[in-house]
Structures are given as C-alpha cells and as structure tokens.
Length: 135
Image (tube, rainbow, N blue to C red; front, top):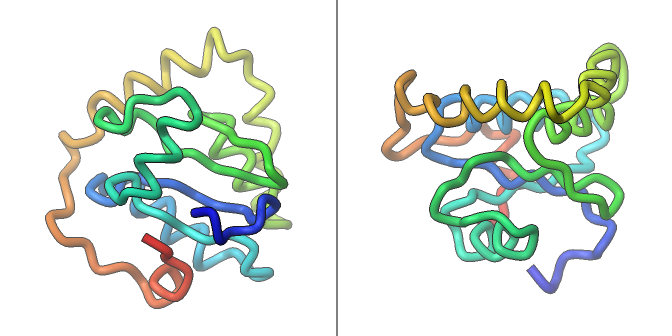
C-alpha cells in the first residue's frame, strides 16, 4: 500500500459479500475517469486499511471509500463514491448528509445480514474491476 500515492482514490470491499462485490463492479463500470483502484478487505492491504481506520479487519462491517485522501465508511462511503462518479450518479451524494444517528443503524442492520443473500466463494471480478484490483 505504501506505493499508492496518498491522493489515490480507493475502495476496500468485502470480496465474499454479494452486495459489496456488486458495488465494486458497479463503481468500476461507471468510473469513466478511472479514478478508483480496488482492494479486497480479505487481503493484507485491505486488512491493514481496516486497522488504520479503527475497524476490526475480521468483521468487515463496512466498505471503505477513500476520495481525495479522506476515508468514508458506511452510507457516507456509498455517497462519496457516487459523488466521485459524475452525473447522473452524483445526484446520490446527498445521501451522505443523512445524520449518522439515523443512517448507521440502518447500514449496520444490512451489513450484519448481508451474507443471508449469498456469499461468493471465489468471485470472478468483471474486466473493469480486475484491471484495477490491487489485492
């Protein structure tokens, strides 16, 4: 991870989670400027980023989205990623303005139950994602 420039936009996602992997594939497909790189939470760099941001790397409770050097978690991560994509996706950026006292419990409920919708044992990333997957 030390080889990445500090301003590099990055998404850390749970590679076994159907929702999280779909989110990463969506971002890779719609990121016309190719500003994001991707790292799985299960990898050593992903685990290190979880720890660096005060998260338990064994829980993988949220994606981490780093935009312009600032880390975002939970719903704010989704909003930051959408805002970085441009129109029409940046219209979802205001979701990040929802007070965390409201958004965090809802996000946490979904995160705790995400594997009920399926796990990916060995996910095959899309071509767009594979080209920018660093771990």
